[in-house]
Length: 231
Image (cartoon, rainbow, N blue to C red; front, top):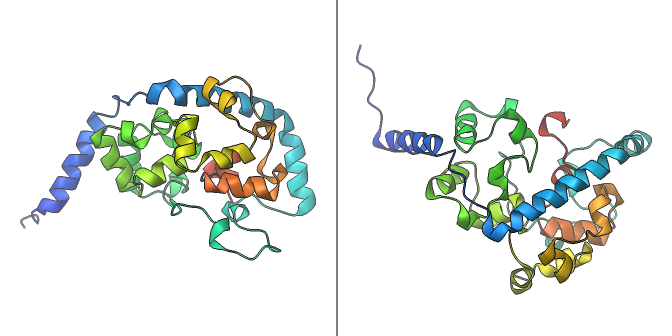
């Protein structure tokens, strides 16, 4: 019995994904070194937050809350309005634990340099420190297969942290980082951190949560909750 011929569309997709896989070691360099500064800041914040983890767990137990994506939504006493929601569509695939991905999604993720650990933990993969326009064409094709375009990638993955302060101002985004305690000198030089970098999501004020959401942060990305630990 003859095997059915592969359609031209399927052949094109397979060829493209294989090309991405072959080029996965050629990760683009973060724009002007800004994202590498971010990595140092965020990992230092992780170290400090680990000290507070036991207190956070007690908070969850005492309040009867569970950590899931719903905590990024408006509070019950605040009517949901567009201003309180994320500015970009929610990337469901990227927030799906590795073991729950389809084989095709895993193949695409591996083509981009992910493994189960770097997928389940945000800001581990080198790829997540590269603004969309600095990705190679093949990498852009790969992230598109995972549901991202330029705007959603730079928001959900980079939180626009590959931009300089003046660029944030021009895009109307600096105001949100100001609400989180950042200023131009701190941002551009990488010297100093706002106190919010030491806060868990539940410790932020409602105004700060709103600002963080406009930068596509939610409790999972803000607190670095591994996807395989979500309920």
